[in-house]
Image (cartoon, rainbow, N blue to C red; front, side):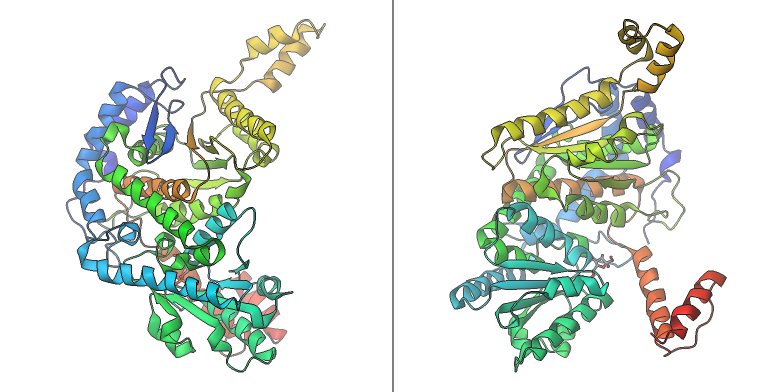
Length: 524
Ligand code: F6P
């Protein structure tokens, strides 16, 4: 329990911040680009003013930002409900902090040695990776992003408990040439254990005498992996102080090295570590994660935007949106502050989106003309890695155009003037103008990566991690637990037992009881 934290809405600093946001320029009167670990974060089309910057700084001071940041980076207790650190930064530091240096470096070396061994052996041409949530999105995102033009071996990622997922994950592979990686922080996750079981059966049914020899585990619970049958020398560990959704920097990154080589994993870690240094040392006004967080706070709480759209203008970042959905929504989807009181202001927004330009033909209509709108994070690379320069020009043009349209809007009077020569009936011109009108003034951020290197991708992910930390701090919530997910898991375990006839059905609402009876009677 943490005491002494003032309810946010009642503080003078919060009121000053919200009021300053309302008075700020929201029409990009001034260019405002923050350089952060090689990324350019253009916040020009967010609310901005000297008054708002000062209010943001005072707000952070009132929430004891510097002490909290130091506690996070030094491995103090950041996750109060589970009484542990959230020390993902230690996993990627070139020289990890002394307290954990030995363990972190030793495991890093073991991962690299294993990949060298697998490469030298030449035995596997496919990898089936089994894991879910934070034990899936990170490696899957990075492998798709950096392995878009091919990977060193075929990579399949299986996460869902839907049997079609494991079926698709195994189909067409040669079991004798397939390595199975089971990743789970807890080694207790239903989806992962069942899918691992299936994969093991698949190996066994192919006549492989010792299927465990083709299985490696990545976990913070090595005892459970051993009990399941994975040998300690094929078990890679990380620790409870690395949150699941912050774990790609640990041995959870193993599939990245298997798919792309250890250099890719090293580059990713280095990029994230560079963002850590930036976050720790850059002055507030030039601090990318801090400024991104403050812009998000203004959007959520001063302007009432309930969601944040992520628009990566890069087809390789196909998994970035779900990765950030887990990072942001599992971290910031909280209604209780650190003292256990109901929060006094809305917290984390809904995060959604998809790569552009596909998104433009899917939901951008809503962004431009829907009554609510949403702030958008546009993400794009300065340089592409393909041989089609005209494609990249058009991609950039679309990205910039969408931002400009959201900001500038188009008024009814301008439209009426445009329509007048074509429409003889002025009433129809006015009517049509209203349909074509764009309100404008809709905020966005443009994040430009030099190119999609492992380093830049690592920096990008760490940028969002630190943004989430700052927002969690201001809202006074714990961004490192996820009790909401745990509750559903408990209920699912009970219902699964009922469906299997291992427990009597009971205690349900009318609808759940009806469907449990339907499936239960079918003898599942
Ligand atoms: O979705 C809830 C969650 O607990 C995540 O935080 C975690 O990333 C995921 O489940 C998977 O958990 P594990 O790595 O323990 O299998």
